[in-house]
Length: 230
Image 1 (cartoon, rainbow, N blue to C red):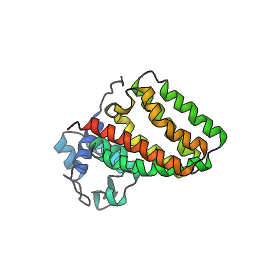
Image 2 (image 1 turned 180 degrees about the horizontal axis):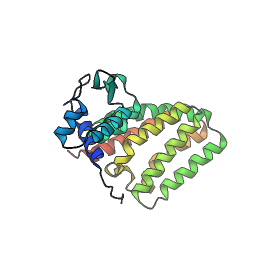
Image 3 (image 1 turned 60 degrees about the vertical axis):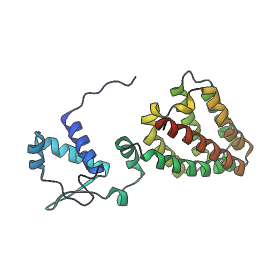
Image 4 (image 1 turned 120 degrees about the vertical axis):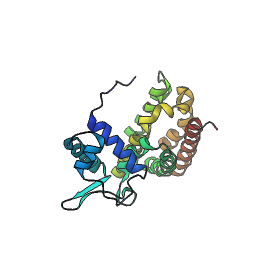
């Protein structure tokens, strides 16, 4: 179980404004009301509003210009992948887009890893696969599976692939309890992943790409079906 957290007024206001921005109540380019007016409207202090604005600015949703005010940033035009965790928390519908990218990028990573991985990295992949199979519960199997994919990204030797992999996991792992379906049987999850690891071990880039596409498409199908049984 995750520990309960105590929310502050800043937390509550940040989430309210975030929902309004992402929900289109405050569209891209719109100026937000002055801090004092917002403070009075929400029944909080101006300092609380200032702190909430600071967080949303850091998150990439707002920008403030002296003499102009605080404006909603066009995050779809100017934002980066670092926004994905926030967007998924607001709207799980983003998961379908993330999984589509995950499948495409994952196939490229697997192909490159098969060619570039060292002997130590190949052995490490096999160890991590065994960890998936021996996981004591579905959550542990899911987290162990994530480590296999992190190791694949590292094996490419391309640091951008590592960062992309980290970003995608940061986006959907917080929701992993809802995405655990492919890992309910850890041994079965490992068997599903084994052809990918074997292809990388053999150094066969084409086979690794195909195995990754098969694995990622199958797990995506299972996860999304569990989210929407209809």
